[in-house]
Amino acid sequence: MQFTAGSFAGIITEWFRWILQPRRSGQRATEAFPTHASFDEHTPETVLEAVVEPSSDIIMRIATAARRLQHGRVQTYIAYVVVGITGLAAVALLGGQP
Image (cartoon, rainbow, N blue to C red):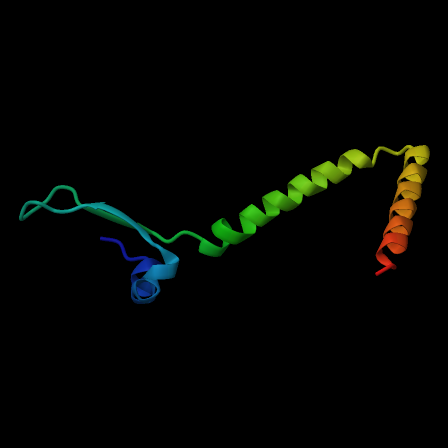
């Protein structure tokens, strides 16, 4: 029989079972002297799997799309600046009137 840190954290895992969502699997002993019995409990990384990974995937997609705009041509960068200034001027002119 083996004891791990999970046996010490079992009480806290039970208290916060509704948020930690532990996954349990095992094979119960069916005989008086079983040859094999097992129990496995895995507590997933809730914040990592539910928040960090999805948000980092979105950020990487945006970064990949922005990387396509950066290819080293000065003329294109000047065009980006002209389009940006034109857009800001349009917003200032149209947004300034009631």
